[in-house]
Length: 117
Image 1 (cartoon, rainbow, N blue to C red):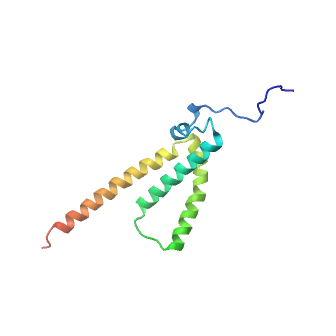
Image 2 (image 1 turned 90 degrees about the horizontal axis):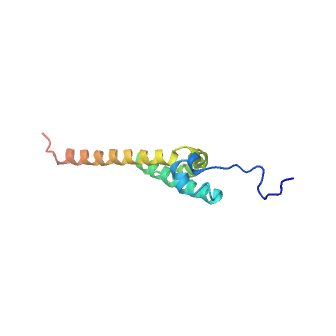
Image 3 (image 1 turned 90 degrees about the vertical axis):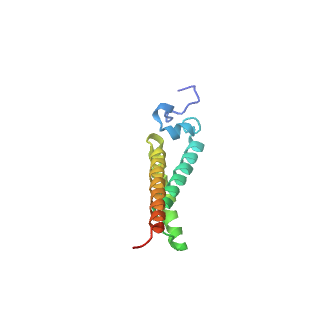
């Protein structure tokens, strides 16, 4: 019989085995709190990317359905985000979409300023 207080089912995870965001949120030290913080980061980044990628305004019911699906879909993404760079990839997508929207806005402003021939 083992006299120690450790559970034989515990798995030791080091910070080197985690993605950068999961390591920064301390998922290896505080697994439950770290998981929910990582889930919040994934949800926030998903919402940001969704809003930047789809400029149309949706009716309220469709908005509820989309965000409910987003919240459910963020759970498996959070599991993947423990070991892979999911949050970092969503951040990169948000930066690319922000640059695209900025350039599109400038292009539309230039078109509106040119006189019609």
